[in-house]
Amino acid sequence: MTLAQDAGLAREIALSAGNLLLGLRKDHRLQGGDLGKAGDAQANALILEALAAARPQDAVLSEESADDPARLHARRVWIIDPLDGTREFSERRDDFAVHIGLAIDGKPAVGAVALPAWGRCHTSLAPPPLQPAQSPPRLLVSRTRPPDIAAHVAKRLGATLVPMGSAGAKAMAVLEGEAELYVHAGGQSEWDNLAPVAVALAAGLHCSRLDGTPISYNQPRPLVDDLLICHPGLSAALTAALR
Image 1: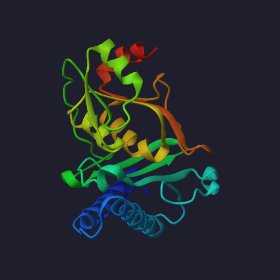
Image 2: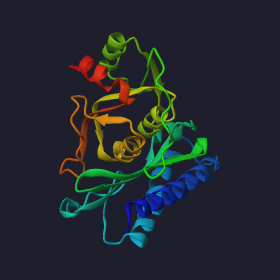
Image 3: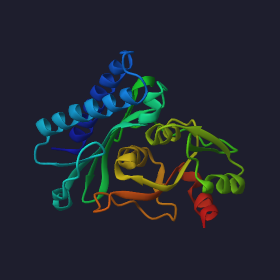
Image 4: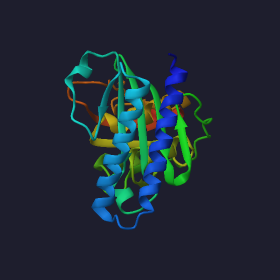
């Protein structure tokens, strides 16, 4: 199999899970937390079944499943978030996503990020061309938990803060030219950013830890302490501002 085939599979699965989630939102018997739980569980089941059928030899790490330590001995590991932005989905907001990512030897190799409510799905196979960076830059932050470091960066760079929901939605907003920077501190799980990072890297964006080092995946502790995704022309100024 090729990475192109893997990316095609990731896109197909992400779209299917996204359609399932949109269908659930039409069922108004499900409200609030019940809607979020149903979305997490049903999207996870769909994705796991699809991966087991198409890539039975690969390992899987999912937010919604028990962690199998056997993945640590696998070269190919699918790292998935069936519903990134459960809170937004539960509130019937549109800024939620589906993440289907593949790490090979700990590196982001393939990604698909579906934005079901907006009818878009970006993949590492064919990301959109980068848009020119705007000035002053726009800095995406968590809608509910903006990190303190974001205010520091915004002051140093003269950036405007833009709150948004899911990590996938924020990363794809940089990809689509709706912002130039996405900074996160305080920790994320690997499933929060593998697929978005794979797509962003394929598009030519800068993706790293806040200190500029690459992110390693399929770790025993599947956490990423901090994250930076930005327009390549801003990476040097941003890493300097973060020192």
